[in-house]
Image (cartoon, rainbow, N blue to C red; front, side):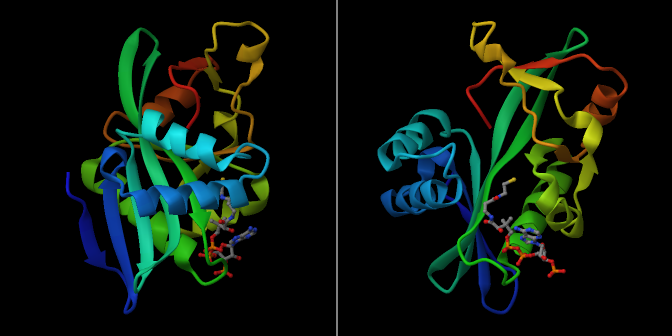
Length: 197
Ligand SMILES: CC(C)(COP(=O)(O)OP(=O)(O)OC[C@H]1O[C@@H](n2cnc3c(N)ncnc32)[C@H](O)[C@@H]1OP(=O)(O)O)[C@@H](O)C(=O)NCCC(=O)NCCS
């Protein structure tokens, strides 16, 4: 996959790329942005580079550029879950960062991610702190309080398994499988078969 570019506004361009196709420069931009913005979870630059290379090869990265500068970025990560005996594939929304904040670049990014999900009609799910939930709503995402604590990461250890996704709101687009509507009909906790998203 060689990537895809499109003019969004007068000066903004969107680039969409698979993780395995990221250049050294792009990996550097993401790792630096992660360390700077996710100070609790992402402390170490080299570790971020390793995780990007080892775990995000299949993820789809979105870059908003102003000229040649990357001004915001995010990803969609393919995730497979089993729910009520059936397999579902959806895209986990994550790594949402505006490098230049407060200029509308985050909104351009989220609208592009939503457009991508709608075009493919595939479910996308992410999580957000309540303080920034309006940011996602304004970009057109659905939000759900009920999605919190509905997922857990399986580390094969009872104590560690408590790391349930507990950020307050789910943000989502419900695709053709209507996965989120189905999830919200029960209280079953769903296992996530990856380290994080
Ligand atoms: C959240 C984030 C991506 C927003 O990007 P941004 O480019 O600054 O957002 P925009 O300029 O497009 O703002 C769009 C709207 O969201 C609101 N908003 C943006 N960031 C906000 C924040 N941190 N808290 C509350 N509201 C926020 C703005 O008020 C704005 O509304 P307005 O147009 O009516 O003024 C950016 O603040 C960021 O990178 N944060 C650090 C990383 C992070 O927390 N990512 C989200 C993980 S869930």
